[in-house]
Length: 419
Ligand code: UD1
Image (cartoon, rainbow, N blue to C red; front, side):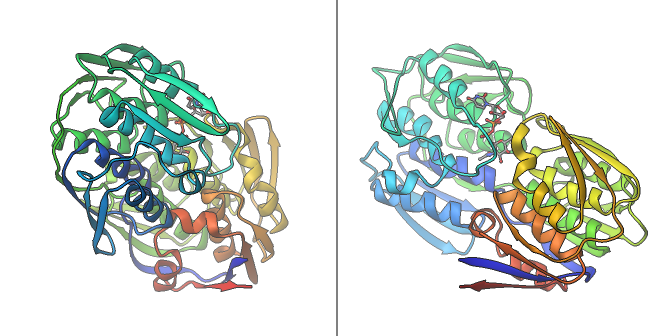
């Protein structure tokens, strides 16, 4: 068992740089399958999830050569398999993006049903609807998803639910479909735009990414490309929330401030001072935090992936905050009870948590039930009196690049131990 030991109540000072966006990388790496050639990727986050995707590519016949910790050359010209090995894909939700890219490349795919972070029911009906409308046949048997097509045809697809995953997956297949595909009611997250930019740099013809409607004119051939992945909105937001909770003064570098506006404005409402530069954001927190209200929603709303981190800030704020989840209703159950064991006062009623601020949190042994819940518990530990043990940190390690190194450089007392 791996755990983090956090000695809290230290303010954070210094500079930290966010890495490449995890949620963009986990779409872009499977997308390289569509190019019969060499892609050079820069600013790839150095996390377990990207390494796992590289292993899947290698297992299917591609070559992946790491140029540095955060860059790699991927050559998919030798890739022959349209089945992602179950033992690798079952661990990771985003491996389902290979369905879209393998369908586009070979007209068939076999991938395990999605695993990944456990924060409630995560259906894939909108992915399936999109693939079927493009002319693919989908079967689910023994935990595997099989997709087959005689040829993908462009289609008009209206998503019943705004879904990041379905938008990405269907876009991956549609770039090689013949004719025009129109996707309506799509997600607008920064990583949707990043994937579209990546695919366009390979020769795809995608317009409208970042709006509600994406139009894709299918092309026959996609070529290799050189591409740098955008900075991680949620990683940057996590460090911003950390300094808001602990107090201190931190410059978060390698950010796109526009992507951070939904987070920045809420932290400012709570009393943090935020100074925005071209590609960096300074967060200063000296006085007491104030209560606020937050409702999560798809981009440009407040991200559900920042719900748990902002809840820690609310727990330490003066007054009663309200936190409403509108994307994944059961997400509160991943961390609220753990925060309560550290002294937080949180009442959950359906989609809304009422958080009554307390003077201080205190150290406890807590369990990280998912990636962002784990990050929030680390923040709670940093701001708490005494020592916190965060158990089950494999989720956190899946998605945060060098979390311990980065926090230690800011003055945190945090270490990883293995039983
Ligand atoms: C992605 C992110 C995840 C983030 C989430 C919401 C990646 C790899 N993961 O997850 O970090 O928390 O967006 O911003 O990018 N839904 C359906 N049917 C579907 C698909 C989704 O009903 O076919 C529902 C989900 O249950 C959920 C909502 O749509 O309530 C949004 O889910 P979605 O945007 O698809 O999330 P993910 O892509 O899984």
